[in-house]
Length: 230
Ligand SMILES: [Zn+2]
Image 1 (cartoon, rainbow, N blue to C red):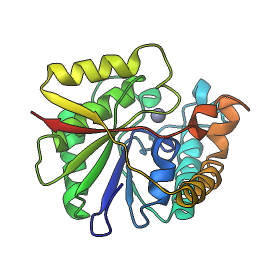
Image 2 (spheres, rainbow, N blue to C red):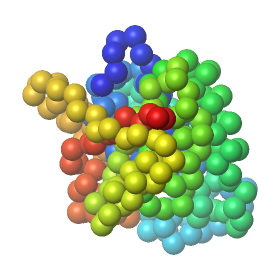
Image 3 (cartoon, rainbow, N blue to C red):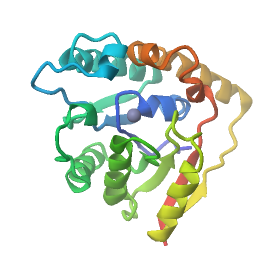
């Protein structure tokens, strides 16, 4: 998916999305960078329903553990973690996270790591995913020095009509989306998939909350779309 001279960046809304949706692709591209946008910890020790389901005492405990889980998962894949300071929607009381503000931080990461292939979420569901999709489009779809590839957000992509709606919306903005189909030999596919399975298990807190079959989609085929302004 990336040649030996390109440097891959995967933009992830939360601490798990990149590996859930692109883990096999990451396993095939050692040295990639994974930038998680909502990796910040709130100052207070609030308790949310999701964090409680994940087994955490409070938000700071949650983010500390989740960053460590992410680092461990990316180590399995041979990728590097970049954690931005933005707060997850469950910790926000206003809409201070704007697409333009996030896009500026993403551009810094793209330039600092000299990345020329960038994977971005289609942002199919959840306000955080939609926000990162919009910010990522601002940061890289028009940049001709970067190949921009969208990934289908695992756990959301099977919801009725969501992929179709996003592709139609991109078309209305003058952005062409073409399925990325690259032949991979069976041995490489198997190796990358097995590595992804091991990496996914590092997100133990999130898997606990999803339940035994709540994340089956993560272990299905990854799907990508090349985006281009026309
Ligand atoms: Zn997410």
